[in-house]
Amino acid sequence: MNALYGLGQALLHALDPERAHDLAVKSLELGLYPRAAAPDDPRLAQEVWGLKFRNPLGMAAGFDKDARVWAPLLATGFGFVEVGTLTPKAQDGNPSPRIFRFARDAAIINRLGFNNEGQAAALPRLLARRSGVVGVNIGAGRDSGDRIGDYVSGIATMSAVADYLTINISSPNTRGLRDLQAPEVLAALLGRVQEARGKAEKRPPLLVKLAPDIADADLPAIVGVIEANGVDGIVVSNTTLSREGLKDRSFAAESGGLSGRPLFVRATRMLARTYQLTKGRLPLIGVGGIDSGAAALAKIEAGASLLQLYTGLVFEGPKLIGGIKQALVEAMEKAKASSLAPLIGRDADKWADREL
Image (cartoon, rainbow, N blue to C red):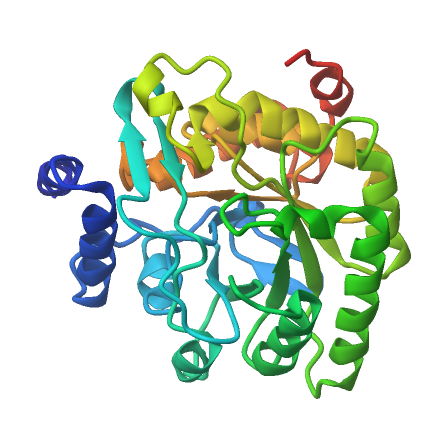
């Protein structure tokens, strides 16, 4: 069976990256995917925001954009799935080609631009009964004249079906979106979003997803606004505009957000600095460059309560899911810990001081 899925992965890598992604989603819809071999070790389970995660490993937003395959993804062994990014109306995103893959760096550059079928199309797919945790990542429309209004609309529309909601203000592929991270603008955004959330019948936890390119000097004010406005958690981080260390000049010249192994140090350093600023008050989701058990453990030790991956799965295949969980169990055994709690943030100071 492993050989079969290895062959499938090789075939996907022979295709254009966006075509490969579409085929992977279709395979999940048709039931052609590896199931988790065994129940998770109970030591991996934890409760965050009142939600019960059977393990801390999630599929990041960007894979299941339209909430089509959250159930199969959970069946592969993920502890949670974040669907989206979903915008109020359907949009095509940026022109193709818009995804670029470079195996030597285990990296991807994308400039998709929130291509999705819109929130109304995803809504009925999330109304089905389910187990596991499914978060919804919401964004602003590409040509919107009121981007804050788009987030307010997203909260009103998706609160009923989301276990948690993530406000995505950090994609580099929608012009001007990252301007919403500026403290004064962010305060206005979160004020209106929280007002809308207060009116919803169901009020899921609210998270904010930040860019890894925020300057060290700017991060304290941004985190301060997030805490002051009652946000429940932070996702650290989105893709980067940096091309530091890439081996291929033509690949590095492509515009868009870079994900994968070259993002790992930048994203983990920012995760640790965010953990220091919040002093553990807000649970953090660590994402960016996780492609091994060691990388996943480093995110936990830098301050993450939960993890997300996507690009690592492209290059390492589904075996990565089980490998990460096994590495975390071994780390708990080595630390004589009965849960991940003692490991969270124990190396935050080391990572926060890391040079880029």
